[in-house]
Image 1 (cartoon, helix red, strand yellow):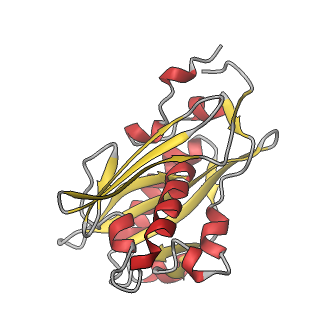
Image 2: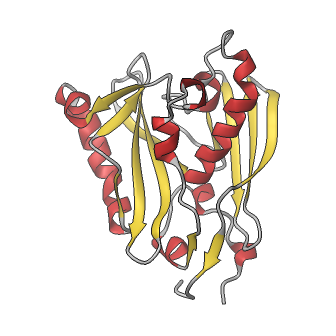
Length: 221
């Protein structure tokens, strides 16, 4: 039997382990592709980022290529693979995000993850954060709720990691403040708590009920 109560989503400790994901699966697929390919630009949380091929991203920046290759190794060991030959880049080029996914023959797509990398003041690329499908789902809800302000501010500066080194296992610093994310997996209902701060002031918080369900399929731990 699986103790779901102790399975706070593993992204809170910074890495998705195979044992956690293989002992359960999501009935519905997470939807990173729909986020990035949405026909409605207002609903696309990645619309403020440029889409680059690996060739273009790595051609003139070997340090980024090395950082990505080093990071992706552990994910590939647990069954993850790149979602395509592309990444997303901030307008200043200091933040790069690479979509990957976990797919199994028996359950289909189990998880989508966005690997985030930042370039520091020394010109070095560092792995910043991995955003799970649940994280992206909560960020999408927040963006929808906050889009009335989209003409006044760049919401991506409130919703995505700043290119600086990240130390908070429960969230990340943004260019304007910080984001706190915590997902609780449950057999009945999965929720993600998101808190967005501008500086030290909370400007948005919500508990997002996931559209995806957890089904226990084995006791492999």
